[in-house]
Length: 155
Image (cartoon, rainbow, N blue to C red):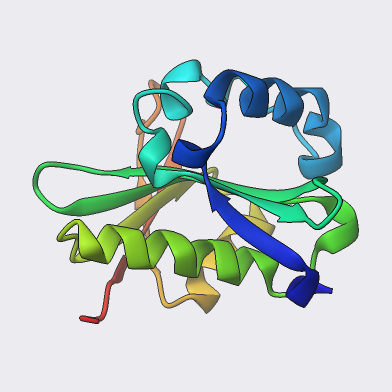
């Protein structure tokens, strides 16, 4: 199935249209409400570091949003795979696409942040080689998060 999916950088698409499509299909990608994490800045200003996985029919089946900071840290904001396409290596392909782009921008590490109770995200990022670190009050008082950091191997 994944062979039939192409990854298209957001810079090649209309950010406004893609964001609207992904929000319309939100519940096919997410088990919790993540709409607030889909701020337009991730599609417009940081869109050069994002991509959508699309079928030949133009269906969105996955996406990645992130950026690279001035100090060469790649921040992986969101990785999503539609429920009917999970366990197909598409999440790994999206992260690989992001890693290649981040590496070309000079990044040396990739970081992601998740809730301590998000077992799926924790398992996924640690399977990619990320080391988890509990960050107390990371998202405000009483809102702990796990910061997952992994090195980017040179090209």
